[in-house]
Length: 486
Image (cartoon, rainbow, N blue to C red; front, top):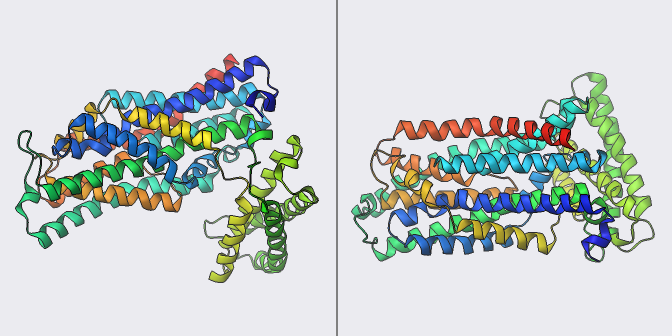
């Protein structure tokens, strides 16, 4: 079935939908040439590969990274902004939200690239999403807390904060270890002319550099996948709220998980009520237990509605289009309540493992991405990677430390960046390739006693600090502008 027959949208709205998808892919294209230098800077700067060869290989590795990275990071992005916002408002207003967050992210990315600043595409995108969510809540007269999934925002914010610190410390430590273990003078040498480093070191630099490109594709590519799924779920809930191509047995698995979670909630209701009576029951993130009780009550109702709706069908495609988004909402309500239960005092490790298993089963129909989305994002990111790399390479290679980047420093920074981003993929958290690598370079400069150029570091730090609030303000401002024009 084609997108035209599935949507039933008028020509104008369909045009806006396709335009929003085009802008989302443009973000990934800009992300590609904005962040390329972070992946290839040390490889080019150490003369390990010619610039054009390095950039083309990086583009290919970014393409591959999108395909092997999974979708956990994508749905961290999706869950930042409650998707029902895009459905509960009229289509034009929902598209205004999408346009605002995408255009603001592209504008900030392009501006920092033009100035040669290694700013974070992740901070930019997430700031734009937060700004649009808050602006919509304010415009509708709703509590600001309802515009953002603050629990998920806290997780993402923590990963963005800690990853550069991890990059700085670990890269510096790795350089010290390599220097003391290998006792190789070549590690502290800087590139001379056009001569490449010795074969072994050159191979290490190339492999780790391309590894950063794969990691970048897997993490940043998922952000593009998340953006497109946010658009598709919000604008076309009947077609994309659930994975209609789910494998056989998913319906039964979801019903089973819903039933098991209902039993678990009911079994622990007395404990929650007792804690409320004692006045000392709080979940880990200091949310009052009354809120948990409310969510659990809603979740039990959602579980019952979910089981009734799925009774007698073998495939999610058999659900009426108008029931698919409500089914998704029920699943997310259950999942959120189960996540809160994991945080309650007295919950054992065995309980957490059981809840995690049931949550994973429950989310199967909601956390997916069609093959065409992954292919489109990987192409946009890969092609974007092949242009625009020169501006930031000089910043990474010459303007962070007081001396030029040595072979050992470049290798240590790349290995740590590749590993850090890979771990973030496993955890399903977005991180900034830009900040992880540039902070890694700074860490190796400090460890190697090369000195740091504070002017450059201040510029990078300012970009780091300002990107999130600037993107939030830009996203909110553009949302009000587009909404007024709609």
